[in-house]
Length: 138
Image 1 (cartoon, rainbow, N blue to C red):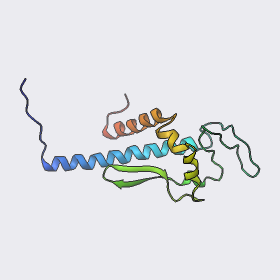
Image 2: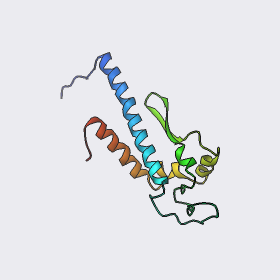
Image 3: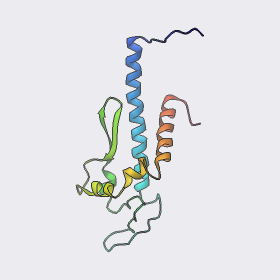
Image 4: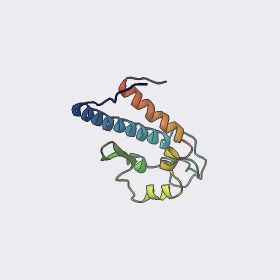
């Protein structure tokens, strides 16, 4: 077998790097949208206590937090942390610390990226990237 290494020009490498960053942003935004949906009122029936003063039944361990006031859900976002490096999470949430508490008990970010919905979130991010490059879904 005979072969030769493919060596794109510096300009092409730069374009590829920029494209990788754009695609990671697309994937992160898709994950944030999925998280927003999972925490939304209509995504699943919650089975926890219906506390006085809350408009809806609360969630139990293993369920996404139930939207009550919407403050935590409105804080869902994407932050660029570096080249092709994006974080999905709760930014500027009110009251502060609520999201950290939820994650201590294996909350929504754990469930979406490592727990029960890890495969679904990976499929959603993959599809978003495929759609962005024109590959469609498989």
